[in-house]
Image 1: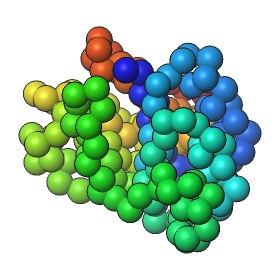
Image 2: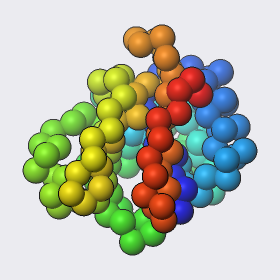
Image 3: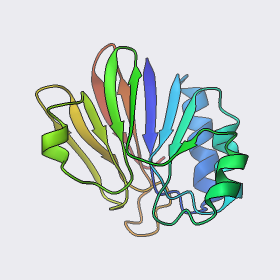
Image 4: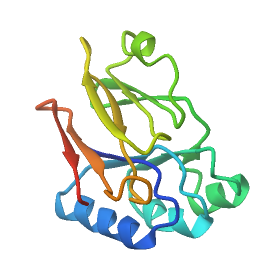
Length: 157
């Protein structure tokens, strides 16, 4: 299964549309957004994807409208899911990463706007960086293939 991980899009519709095009072109099976969509209009392109889950971020103030727009695909983290037999813990703000990496194959977070991939005994700790590109001047996301275990930072998007 090919999974796209992104975070911190902060209403940057140009980058959101570019990401959606990239995941469709790359035939990604699942998209996970780790928080900070900000406005409901910014979650709409994600909600149209068949396999999508979003995590609430600290800048996602319109929670009810965001979740309505996302058709119930937006969750308050941390969220535990299993995809293709791999366990994932999804959150926006990071906490206890090393401890949690012993319990889950993939611990995924956003919030800091800086990308980070740390291999662990079970899998990896992943921060895809910022999709908006506002803080680092570099929009990025992470591609994960659960069959080959290949991880890749995609930047620019």
